[in-house]
Length: 203
Image (cartoon, rainbow, N blue to C red; front, side, top):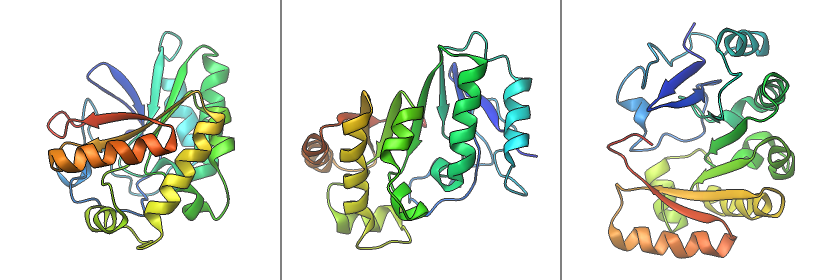
């Protein structure tokens, strides 16, 4: 079994699936089998909720202030387990701040609106914007919804802003300074906060 709970630079992360509708050109998972203190983040079989629950029980979350759902897959690809795990973590530590790192394609993945329900279970939602236009987004993310993914991701973000107190969009500093600024304007149009992530640091 791959690591479900792992730490990276003092942060605590939950890796609950390897499935993802994107194959991003810069994805950290293409660089190795694990990050942080994890030995392996690739699952031989997708974890069940019981396995996720056991991993949570085996880690001392009682004094953890923040936890992030972000592993080697898109967390919303395991939508039911994601919600169940978030709720279970709340029962273990009611004061914990939960963040979801997502590509924002949950509605396409699950075939239904998901922003409101996710916002009810996460304090922070961080959406990977990646590029400022649909064409460039499709090229760098190599997603399975070409021509649709970019607009769906923006609409998902707008919906999250309605319901979640802390929504941000991110780009990785592998794109040009001009594209970073263009992406900032796209982000501002959704009402979300904007963050440029460091590829070198992996976060």
